[in-house]
Length: 265
Image 1: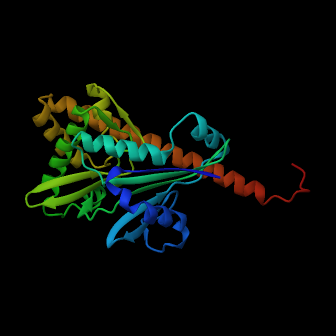
Image 2: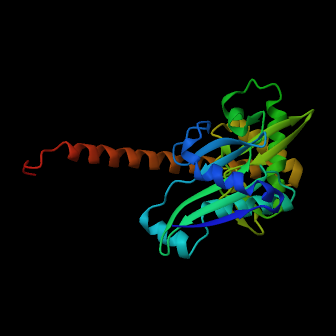
Image 3: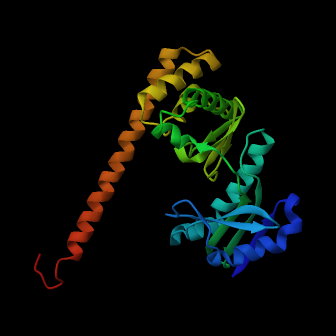
């Protein structure tokens, strides 16, 4: 097994501690989030907190793809974080990434960043409409997304849990996380509006965002709302259709597993 370890120049003095923290990943007990696919653990190095994200081991085909043809999720997360910061877009400071490979297969990857203390995520805006500055945050978030697009950043995982929000008096700072899926380049109106589709199911929020988007960009508000609401509904339909299909597949797999092997069918 080989390791390909890369550390940001600002953190070279911590290299030994970071390598050790990754090596002992399973021993760390402070886990961040639900840990359904990828596992994020919090570690303390020199009295400062960092997160280590361990990405799920890919299937056999992707073990070959990530070994020879495509950058790993950890490497992309690191590279995209550095690119965002150069563009003036906030994200928890990237520290390092570590790849475990063999001569022919990709095995495992880790991404290390500073732990960010934040006040809420965009997700809370979709579940708690009693947040006192709810509309102000939502409008500021809409302008932030416009800034992403103006900088040629198409965040493909622009979803409720992937923007962390910090209050700074009457201002708000937005930090992107889960960065491994992005595209960079000029974005037309259609692509920009589609990028809002995963954020909420609530028409009231779409109306606020489309109003702020129109103010910020000069686009026609009705046109913005119609497109934003249409793409939101289309995404929701696709999302729940996938869930229904998965449930059916699970049902039939479970059903046939219960059939005795000698049963004539």
